Picture (cartoon, rainbow, N blue to C red):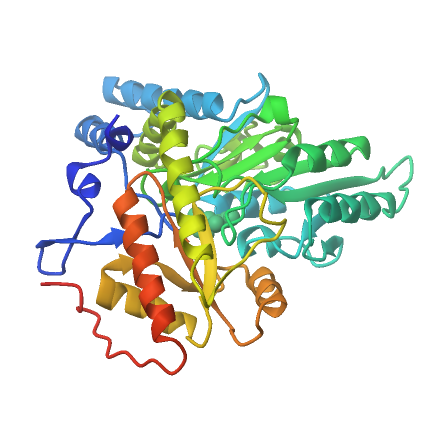
Length: 426
Ligand code: PMP
């Protein structure tokens, strides 16, 4: 399996310096972005040699490229367990996908969203008509909050029936926890509400099954799924999307244009105006296929890393780890922590400069959630450190991280580091 086909330099734990040398470095920032599979690079390279514009030309290259583009769509549909009449729209990423659905929101729709969401799923909705739920303290709490919000919705009229969209995250980019999507979706369904699932963090780790989950839409990004930036997906029900104005107006989104009127296309084309990112779609599909085919091996690799990471960090004196739903929640290989007496930005900088480990410090585009978690902690921090392992990570990377954090925590409050950005480089 070899980490499901990652390039040799990635498997060897090497990163390039600015002068092009390769150095040993543990990149534990998979929740931000993931390295591309070799098969993704090969698919892009091969498509690069022959591409032409899709769906417009009758020339042979245009037909080949169109076939590749639509085959990519079919692979993504399979990857998300799409129903027969679901639509798969290629976007630039999760943020783009959520904004697309927000633009397609029917007017009489109430959006229900937890304050703990990533800003990409928290912010695109119209202020009026959006109900914000507090950060839940447990899975049960989330269920109760959602149930009561749905029960309190105005009844609606025959002409304007009540309609709601519940926005859920599949896995938290802060705590790594998988949300109780099944039970929350069941509650939404009981109240006739629709569901959008943000799978940005789960897509690389857990299967998505729109049909089995009974979820209406799912959004995710290629760059968190071992494909490059600038690719993403909104997949699901076509009715709202077909009734909405096109996301972008332009060529390819039209059925007929006359001097008097424009009739827009339906289906994915309606929201994919302009020449599409064919290479991105091909790359994303290659990543989806690779993950689908290696799911069991990926699961085993990541489960071992998750256990080692959590157990290792939680055992360190002076280190606090953060959870939304409690320690028993099923989760991916992401841990957010703070070190008593040490600023989180300093911890992240010291891990990079002194130990050759890349993590992230801050609030991870989920400010309300991180503020809430930190308030429940020791109260001294205004940001946290996030470590996120993945396919390119090894047990040695995790051991290095745990040893490094142990050393930093032992240095304790008042420790000062002379940090240089190049500290780890030769
Ligand atoms: N949702 C979650 C849970 C995320 O982690 C991210 C990326 N950090 C996004 C949405 C947004 O993804 P993108 O930046 O690729 O649009």
